[in-house]
Length: 369
Image (tube, rainbow, N blue to C red; front, side, top):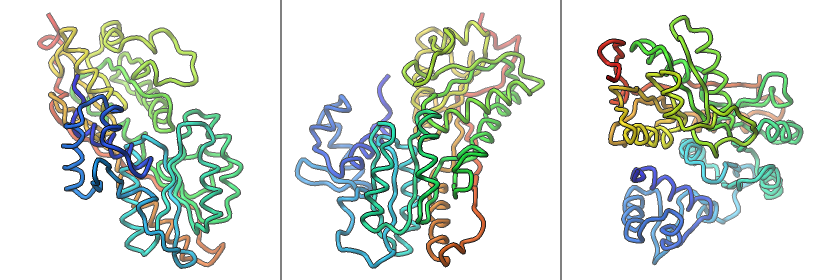
């Protein structure tokens, strides 16, 4: 299936932000599209003010290399650490940026590569450069990665706020400021919507390589187990390569359309949008119509609405998370040292956007003949 235009442009933004600048020809090779296509995307992104164009080169409006290099007044620099190639968190970053820049704070953006423990040296470098505060979104592909960061994060001696991360209760980071989406509520929205439409057998699929995916998996299991109208359900990986820990049961890494048939499921919830869009195409190839034969809900809502069949989707408040995290950090920076008040664990509620990929299920009329 052809990649949606907005998703491709998000990937361009992520790639350029990770490096500060990139050649158009290199982007075309990475995305496996023509140079003409990338140029067209770059022109539109530049028109929207999201990129800067040069002669064969494109530069990020977010990259640390493009921010003012004049040393700021003491206490005016805020370091922001986000994972490489994570368009979801780049939306949160945009939200944080608007608040910090309005407050006169210089942003020092650090992109963490896709290796365990990559955030710590970036934070140490930022502190050595005089950062007065930190906004952090560690990748934490596994629970072990997260636990490995507890000690040094808890020992930070500057104000720091975790963005779209929720440390477990009782951990060393439980008493650290954090702002995130209430993904358990997002899971509830998806299940409630499908059950109200008459669906009783549901497959849940997540990418099991992030804190959000692990939270969703746990929430889906708890909600489906406790719901009196859910007859059968199953969890699996949204893509076999999404799992890092393993081992998994055979059905948890099987082709999703096969699991739907085996369970007799009439609906699926997928994290995230791209995997949901690919499922719709996969089902069409197997003669299964969306939403007539199977309703599909995506979780993320970055590009869910751009498919041939626009997908019903749960939308975490990505930009608002960034703004709230930045506002909390500013409060900490303005308060007397040690006098910032109680630690805050802020959760913002996702919303459900109903589109064309879900419909009411009538057991007699809608079952495939």
